[in-house]
Image 1: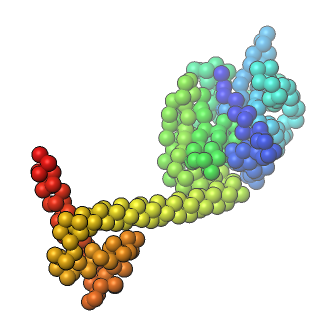
Image 2: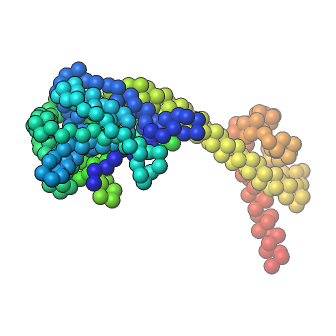
Image 3: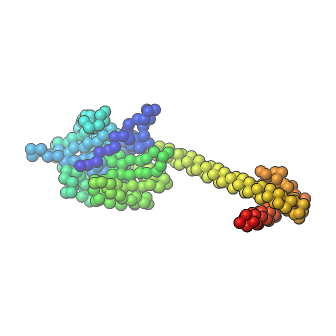
Length: 336
């Protein structure tokens, strides 16, 4: 069975808005290449994804079926502009999925089918009988044709995730050979496309945000590309702010925890020894910390006379903590 395009990407949400994937396809569906060879490459990709040869009582017909209206419109236009073939689009509701429309284009003239197959270098797939594959790569020799082929493949059986939620671009292929052909074409644009098997299908995918931007550029989806870049910039700014806030919060928590420990240590020293028994430097720091529990080390150092740097204040506080720890150990030993 050939894969049908995911109908959900054209559904509108509660606000009546189309998914990002649907918007990309809508943009690509309106893009018609000027050169005939590019139109042929794009049509070949669509037929390899959505096309199938059917035979009944000795008669054959080429059937293109999709649940995406944009794909049906694009296929209809390409057949007309490339081969001057006039046909109709039949619409029916999918019996399994309520309210989902299936768009079908049928070509029954044997001569027209032969012209299409020869021009687009198509053959029926020996593995999955009836589906179509490229017999060779002649239709995608030029870079412009490679772009058109990727565009057609994505239109027919691709999807892209909402960039607000994550980065994932994929095109589903019916078999490994088609996936490898597509991967080779995509990699010619320096995009590191990978392949994974999913049930009976093979999926060519890209996950890195910058490379998905490159894919949109390759397919010439310029409006979607700008939208994605804007979203990426905003996300990076939010992530940067969040990292700074988290770092500052962690530092504040660390400072507060340290100050609380210092206060406990100083109270113990005052109780067991008394500040009058300490040298002047330690006594000054101890009194200031008790008076200004939220002050930073730098602020405490500025209050001392003479002033002391952060490292000097920290050294004195550590001495007080060491004294408190010794008192706790001695107290513990006495209890034993």
